Image (cartoon, rainbow, N blue to C red):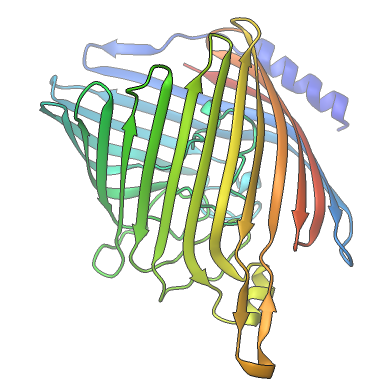
Length: 374
């Protein structure tokens, strides 16, 4: 199927989907959900000795169906099921290697303790990261900074406290089974607390008009990081992550945002492992700059400039020492979105990525995505 035909199918799908409002079953139960489908095309120019490649994808990217139960004013239960096709990695593997397509994603109970304090127990999403975990809420079709280090955690199981100290300041802490799980899609923790636990905390401040400041930190006691390029586990090394982002509403049309992330998960066990994985360390930083402009109530666009720098490492000593450089990149993107209805939108994206110390020299990404929510 050629590109024009595939884009025509996307358009037909968008036209065929009806618009629904959020479904409220009764005063105690409501149901919500979303799905996104896209056509994307990526052209990659290989570095010295590596061939040029291209690939495309046309399918449903992900979908979620969730329910919120509020039996009392103080208690809220949330449960959701998440779908990600095997062609996109499934729930627990890289693209084409997943073994599961549907999983229980959210499964937690929150209790309003009063005086601004909320206690939550169960399976929930990490608080870290400016970009959304959910494809329906992303500013762009692709994330700006998850390529090598994958520094933003996903889901885990445990207990957390969120405290609204006043109208401008909120803090939160969590004790979980792991900050970084051993599954590629990060849809669950590792299920252990005795031999490996995770913690994270954050503070957000909105005391300056139109400005949001957010700072968070995470710790994994015995690192088993897994990222899209299969970095080998460094089980003897703890993992630390620091995350700071700020968002400013300049006026009714313009929103600006910036984020800096630092992650330290140690280095590969040896030079051979580093060469096989293409990553000498699980240590480095990510950054991103975002700008949004609202043309109308229906049409908006995000522009992003982001990058990542993976730290280098030296293996061995003396004349046998081998130095392996960490890959890095910068990425420029633009992603306009048009809201067909309150429940249905169409998003496009064009990105150019420039790599250093990597098998690819550069890459161009283009895509169109349809998102439906209720």
